[in-house]
Image (cartoon, rainbow, N blue to C red; front, side, top):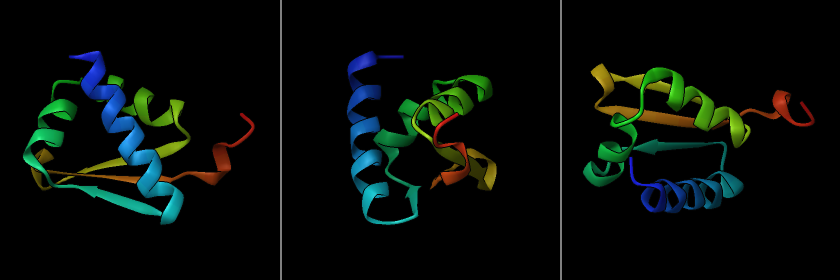
Length: 73
């Protein structure tokens, strides 16, 4: 997992989720970064940023949602 790519993707997700409640990752380059993470790592990545994550279509689509109930935790 390349930290600079993960950081750049986290920044993109933060921008998108600051303007809406969900972001659907469908770009191959973004999916490649996320697929390198284990299920636990992906969940922790989302939790660290206050998001919820759902994998769909056998991992071909990954969705992130704002998770307001975690703020302040």
